[in-house]
Image (cartoon, rainbow, N blue to C red; front, side, top):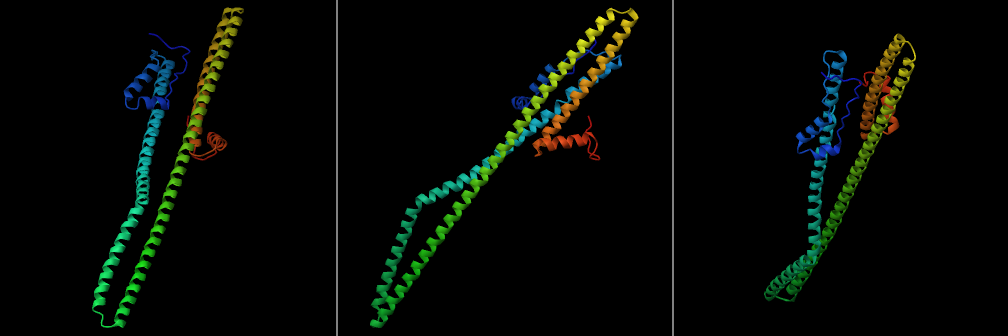
Length: 305
């Protein structure tokens, strides 16, 4: 049976681009993770083998949360597109109707004027008919005065209607301007949110690169220590050499465990920092909050690694 000795930690990562690429075919993303995960054989008869096997499986399970979160982000983006589409339909429909009304206004006014002229003709015919039946000049004068009064009332009504039309146009334009400003504000907020997410993603990538560099440096240092211990052991007696080799192996094992714990804690802290900044905290405040949680200064609010 093959056994794992001095095995390096399994490195798996889920990017938003992976979820976008395989969102409609999740089985392909599962296959990709399967290929990334090593297929080592563990010695289950030993405690170290069992621990390594358990850690290996737990690392694979951790791929679930970032993939689900990325899928939720894609769903949220789809909802934003739907809201934008509804806003577009409403604003576009109102705007086009307003433009059409504006361009048709001369025809509308002409039609109203024709109606007024026709009404005046009908009134004139009625006036002539009334005049035919007038008994004297005083009755005819009364009819003329009544016609003038009615014309004045009609003119006042037309002026009132024109004033109301102008006021409605001003209100409609103000509404359109307000909707445009609101849309611009929403777009600006969405753009700033996207930029914040991109900054957070860049910071996470940089943190991962730094952690990887530190891990490699620690491994190289441990290797140098082992070689130096080996040279010293070869110059000493066999018993002394065996004791020094055993001590060196124990030191390397502890250093490896410490490196894993440090990387594990740093990854969790960076993930919490990114999420706090995503929800509006600045970097210094978010780091202070994480430190207080690590030092258990926030009561029941703690970080469990």
